[in-house]
Length: 269
Ligand code: HH2
View 1 (cartoon, rainbow, N blue to C red):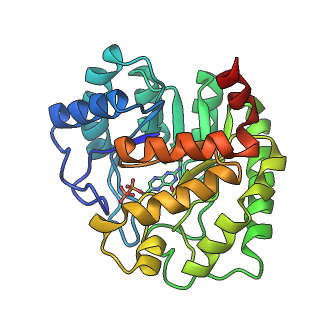
View 2: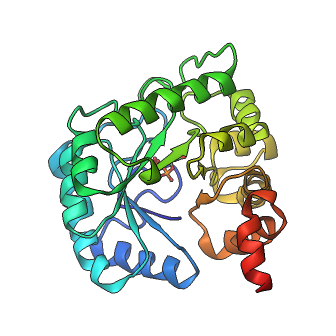
């Protein structure tokens, strides 16, 4: 999953793709590089990000979706917590809603997704982007994320979203200390039993920077190591800024991962 942020303030690519033609060009490049999914976002969720109003978010993402969707066959995901942004994005060609609030922020979100038949990413976050890194606390982060997934899957199903349309994401960096992120990555395979595709967003995140002691522009090797281990432990959707760099990491790790065995048989056929 290649990331296209149409924001001035995203933690890595903020301001690079603010013009629709720049964002569309970047998205097409990511597809060329091998992205199987595009994730388009108009609001940063970095710690302490300033919330964006609906109109500004729509003005950022809709022209890009309208310009992009006729030219790509890969599914497009809209990274939003607002139901109206999701609805208009789905109308403009998106087919996945990446809701970092897991249907908790906007009470109309679940209905919009259920009615459209879109897929949904349910991501775990403790707090909100404005508060999440103040003092994250867990007694057992993996058990709590597992419980959260079970509860949110239940809500999604009750709202009429098909189980086959649910993707889960432990939310690396969202209300987590470095040790919480490491525990989640170490135990990622414990979420496989929920039988939904697992998405991970590790790309250049702060906890990687903390370990490799590098600024955001120099975290690609740390990201590669984290991605390889996530794939080995069952992640099947890998959200990245650098598709060209990470695609070989994913392919090699997937060829070795027990969770990707079906794909291996396909290679051999
Ligand atoms: N991370 C970011 C944004 N959206 N969505 C999911 N499902 N999982 C993630 O880990 C995730 C996400 C943060 O990365 P980025 O979009 O590059 O930064 P920003 O939020 O500052 O725009």
